[in-house]
Every structure is written in structure tokens, then in C-alpha cells.
Image 1 (cartoon, rainbow, N blue to C red):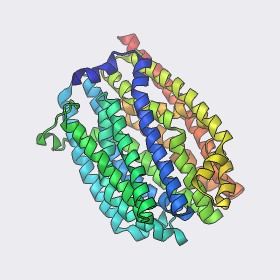
Image 2 (cartoon, rainbow, N blue to C red):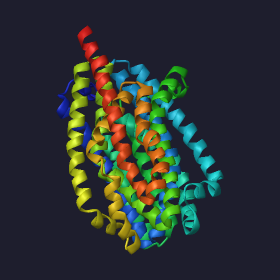
Image 3 (cartoon, one colour):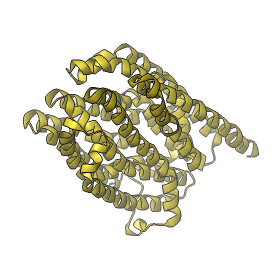
Image 4 (cartoon, rainbow, N blue to C red):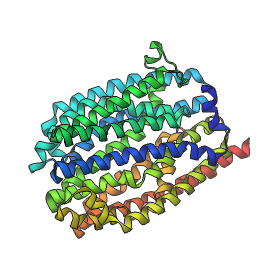
Length: 452
């Protein structure tokens, strides 16, 4: 039965299969995003707006370390999907075992590094002035749980590669729901403040880890590894690294972007501008959850069918995913343009923050309708094992365009230049990705079909 779960990726109709894969992923991302939003609302209403800024300062560090697990998961899952598609189960098992070993080594090492340099890292990421003390409290507790989150992110991607989107969804629901319950207990009832918010998040990571451990030990998973699979194999590690580096680079750039934007906004508008960016940042994952869900559903389908040489199905899933994601992105765009004031008031009662955030939010999300092309295009190259184009296209949005714009535009437009940078970089990166994706379909997929 486990065998048929992955083989469905190469046999079911693409539209049905994409919905089957994308809906659980979207639900998981939605609940996780709602968790982040509600968590921020709890913190803002029960502790204060400065606490929102403090959490936003910590996110780049914790995201980067958690991204180590995610990158190992995504890189290895691309190999697993293609190996299962090519009926090469031994390679899939060895890959999974190497993923576990790599996740343990890297997440623990970087968490230890982050804790050792806590007093230097927090100010560097914008935790200055009154933000420093609450940020340090939150940071130190969160980093104890980040290695556990790394395993959760790695395991979640492997579950999806097996063709089990519902279990991957459960793995995302558990920490989200658990965090909200623990927020209420630790912040609302026990009045533990920032420490309560941090322990709630860490406790939710532990709950998710226990679920994923149960999944792989149970009969639900077809990847039954033993101790021999943990021994690192150079060619597999190299392939995991090259493909996973795409995800790691993206998350690293996100961390750097948070650092830069927090510092630039602090110079222009102080804590108020940093808090406004924190709210916009929270909304970004929530707003794009259906697009991210379709992207996650798309990856194992594209990888499996590429591995089994069903190139017509690969083309079909590319076009179908872009079409579905674009329609949903337009609906999200309309909502954000109409209701930014309502959204802002959910997070805070601070009138200064309420006055500046809505217009900034509109600018930050102005290019959402076209972003599906960029996300799906970059994800395709990662899914089929083409690390270099995947890396370059992934970095176009923030590293190649956004960061230079962040330094240039504020010189001429002040703080407004920061917010203008978001849609301009989105448009430019989408144009570049569309060109290379179209070229790939024409020169690679169509040529392989002609030669078959």
C-alpha cells in the first residue's frame, strides 16, 4: 500500500493530483500562518507593541537555523521523489538516513553558536534600545527548540515526497494549534510575558517532533531506515547539499533582509517603523498561503514524473500550478488592498503603528498577482535536480534585486523607498524567472519528448 502512495504521483490526473497535494499543504501553511498571526496578536495585546518588534528581531536567527533542516529536507526530498519515480528505493532510504544525520549535526552546531553570541547578534538584527531586553529573553529560549524544529521541517518535506500530503499537513497543524493553546496558558493565565511566548513556541516544536517520529516508526511510512543508512555517503551528501543550498540560501537571504530592513527602518522611524514591518512580515506568509501550498504540492509531482520520464505530465503540472496559484493570488491581492486598516488593528492598539502600517502594507503586496510564476518557476528547477538555475532564480527576488533597491531607493525617497523596493523586486524577478522557465520547457522538456 505504501508503494502505491508514491506511484500515484505518476498516474493520477494532474489537476486532481495537484489539488490532492496542494490542499493539505495549503491548510497546513494557513494554520501555521494563523498561528503566527494570532501569536503576534496575543503578544501585542497582552505584552505590548514593543514585544512584537522583539520577536521580529529574533526571527531571522531562528529562521536561519530552522532553515538548515528545511534545506536538508527539500534537497533530500527531491532525490527521494525522483528515486521513487525511477523505482530506486535503496537510494531513497540512504538519502533519508543521510538527511537525519546532517540535520542533527548542523542544527545543533548553529544553535550553540547562536546562543554563544547572543549579545552581539540581537543588536545586529535591529534589537536596539527598549527592544533588546525582551528580544534576548525570547531569543535564548527559542534557540533551545530550534534544532527540534529543524527535524520537523526536514521530516515534513520527506513525508510529502512519499506522497502523503495529509500527514505532512498534520505535522504542520500540531505545532500551530499547540502554540496557541500554550500561548493562552503561559501568557494569558500564568502571565509569563516574553518567556511564556517563547516556551509556548518551543513546546509546540516538541509536540510536532513527536508526531513525525511516530510517523516514520509506524507502518504509514515506506522509508524504513536502519543505522547503516545514517553513514554519510559523499555523492548523496553532495546532491542534498547542492539542492538544499537553494532553500538555505533563500532562507539566509530572508534573514539578511530582515536584518537590513529592521535597521534601515529603525533609522528612519524608530520602533514604530520596525513594528509596522513586523506586522507586514506576519501577513506575508498568511497572504500567500495558497500560493505556497500549490508550490509545495507541485514539487513532488514534478520531481516524480521527471524521474519516471513522463515529460508531458511535467509540462502539464507546471502550467496547471501557475494557473491555479495566479487566480488565488489575485483574490488575496484584492483583499489586502481593501482591508489593510482592519488587519493592522488586529495586531495593535498603538495609534502610531495603526497610522503608518496600512499604506506600507499595500505597497509591500502590490505585485502579488504575478508572483506565482516566480515561485513555481524556481521550484521546478529544484524539483528536477537542477541546482544552479534553481539557486539563481530563487535569489533574484531578494538578493539580486531587493537588497540593492533597499540601499538605493531610500536615498531618494526616504522610508517610502523601503516599501517601494518590495513590488519592484517582485516584478523584476518574475520577468527573469518566466524567461528561463519558458526556455527550459522549450529546450529540455519538448526536446526530450521529440527524442522519445
